[in-house]
Image 1 (cartoon, rainbow, N blue to C red):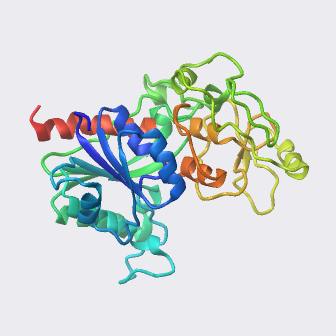
Image 2: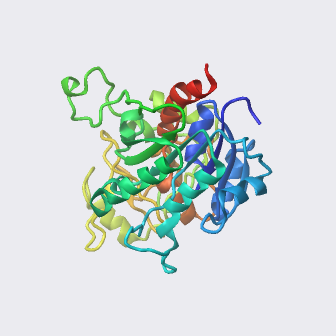
Image 3: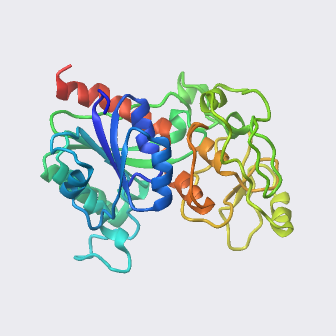
Length: 362
């Protein structure tokens, strides 16, 4: 274990939150999830952290600590992003047909049972408006009942140097202090003026993120970079890592033909896939979607194919040294559902400066 404040990551997926907190100097003790591909990816990229394969619908926070061999006072903070699809306050009992309904409540219960000094919960922004705001009020109220002062914030990832317009909701709760969300130093769009964006930097674009990666034909895989890094973002992503996970979806000619008909930034002509579009070099990407998708969602700005997992990871701000494992559908799910590490790092840094410092009296 390290010397930084300690964290357990519930519903950890492949580990976007864990990676961001580690890079901010936290000691991530463990990730918890119940998908084999998530476990393989998490273990490969977080060698100093344990992984507990557990269904948090059935495991209490106390049981999680016991199975990880952690003392009750070993965890300073709990982080995680429980799914909220189907969550409804109108349901008095869990719906067996959709066990995701009460995973938000299970996260709250786990925080109560683990009893950390602070927590962070991430979710989709619609949690703020579900049932006319009643779900957000419920979440805040439940955390306050167990002793936390809660701050709610909606964050756009592009503001923190992520090449993607991705809005997410965060709840941060503290026992002994209050929390204020950090403000990013990037403007939210390429069109936003300096006047409107103050002294902020322009957004990181798809071109800034992907232009050094080698071209691919459908089904092709490459493990060599096309050029030297051309942007600071590319240099940060590459470090001294090898290129992995850069394989194009194996499209047939019919799909290639559809993609070819779309210009940069345009929708791809499908009758039932209105969200499919070709990315534009000079803009951030739209929100990358998760789910175990068997096919592509966004197409490359100029190559007639869907994105590789590495391109998806770049758009989410994962470094190239972060390798994804398991079936490619699960790799797409992990990259689509993750908290971008740059966002996680920014919020983690703010927690360290505001909350941990106050808790430890430093």
